[in-house]
Image 1 (cartoon, rainbow, N blue to C red):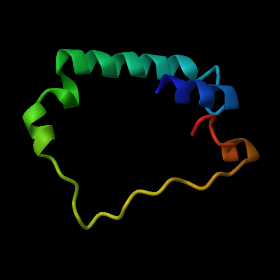
Image 2: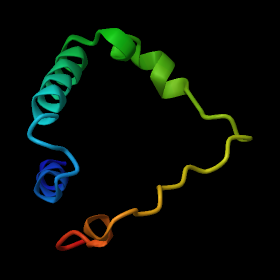
Image 3: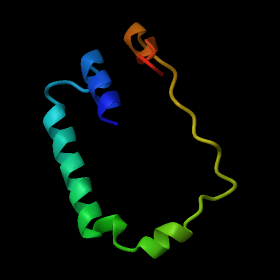
Image 4: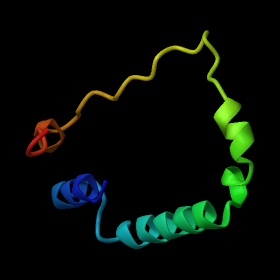
Length: 75
C-alpha cells in the first residue's frame, strides 16, 4: 500500500495540499480498526456480508492523461 501511495504522490495524483487530509484519514481508519469502532465494530456482521449478485462488476476508470497511463514499476 505504501509503495502505491508513494507512486501516486510522485505522479501528482495526490497533491501536497491533499496529502495531510489523506494522512489524517488513514490515521483515523487505523484507529477505528484497532478500537473496533465505527463500521468495524461488529466483525460478525462484516464476515456475513455479501454483495448483491445483481450488482455489476466494478470497473476502473479509463486513464485521462499520459501520467496515468504509466505502469507502476514491478506491476
